[in-house]
Length: 146
Image (tube, rainbow, N blue to C red; front, side, top):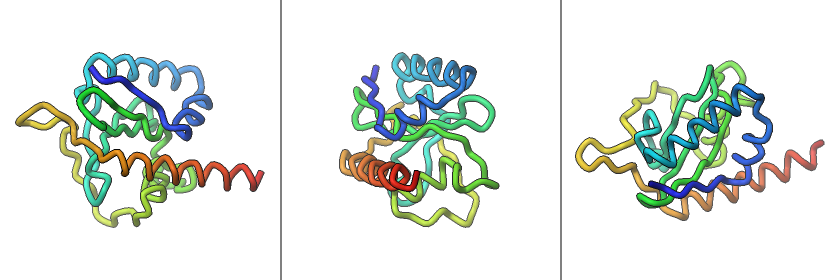
């Protein structure tokens, strides 16, 4: 099963979770380590993001994961999904980090694990590195504003 790493931004997001949300995340993390892509619900669609998978944790809390290989997963983001609050919406942040416009149409949600081979969609290491780099830059900008 995969070894799991966490981006610096996801680490900050996880540290800010309240007790029940943190319990849901910790339970998910155990499942991810033991079940791999089966612990996630669906993969995103569209440019670049089709290599990322999502799990609904509790209420509107989501976790976004990239698989680099069958043995390596990266928690990219953890946050609420709220269409009415784009400043805090996890998908809005993800699109911002990827330098993409959010889709206007409703997204499809194919399974994270492939039907034929049971494997997740592997993300190129550069995609993950770019998302991490953009997240660091965003975190620095937010820190300067405070």
